[in-house]
Amino acid sequence: MDGTYWAADTTERYLPNTIALDAVDEALAVLNQFNRAAWMPLCQYEGEHDGKSHYRLDLIKAAALPAEYARSDRLTASRDRVDAATQSPWVVEEFVFDRHGGLVASDDSDAVHTDFVVTDVDDIRVAESAVNHDGPSDTETPAEDIAAARANAQLIVSAPQDLRYLAALLDHVCGGKDAEEIHLRGFCAHCGTALCTSAVSETLTALDGTTHCTGSPRTRGRGTTPFPHVLLH
Image 1 (cartoon, rainbow, N blue to C red):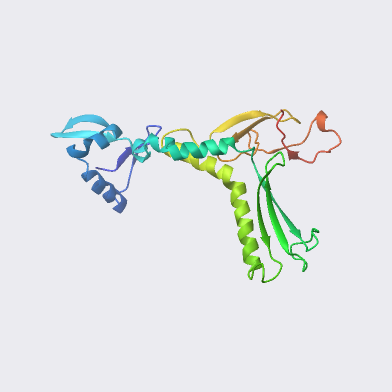
Image 2: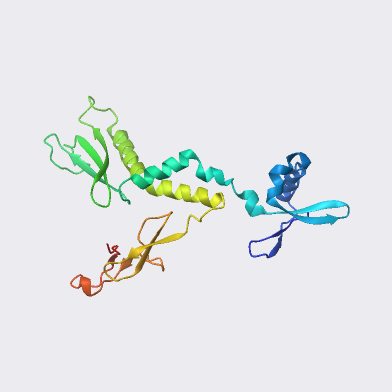
């Protein structure tokens, strides 16, 4: 092996003669007729030269995981659960109460209960993480318990986007669709701009990457302050 390789656009490139190249040489040395079934699909036969058979290894195929990894029963079930859930993105709101059920600031000395409520885009409650901290009988570590409840709520909020991103990334690694691929969702109700989302983000975004519009005749009276695109239903 002399370090020659070809990029996806067929540009010929070279790896320097480094320890990394030596490691590749060592890895290739274990390929032989006994494990031919594993490496042959990743190669193109280049013919006989100097009494030896020569093959060109497709590095993209070699780096990709087998497609069945992206179609495992567990991953399929995970995708189904995300698709069946209510519309995301989800948000979390923090509510702090005193002993009489009144809302107070989080640092109020009368605060005894903290709720983290997760809702979807239609304001439907998805989940709740709560902590009672009315003295040692409830908890001796209120700050730590509240921080843990906040982290749990944030995990729930982020789960749909995280799972979609990881599934799309696995598709990409397995040679399938790109995690960054955009999908047309519709048009902005205010300015008519085409809006897209991706597996990475469900934020409604124009093709130029903007997430806000400056209005139209439909939104007179709002001034020229940018506001988020709204999908036309």
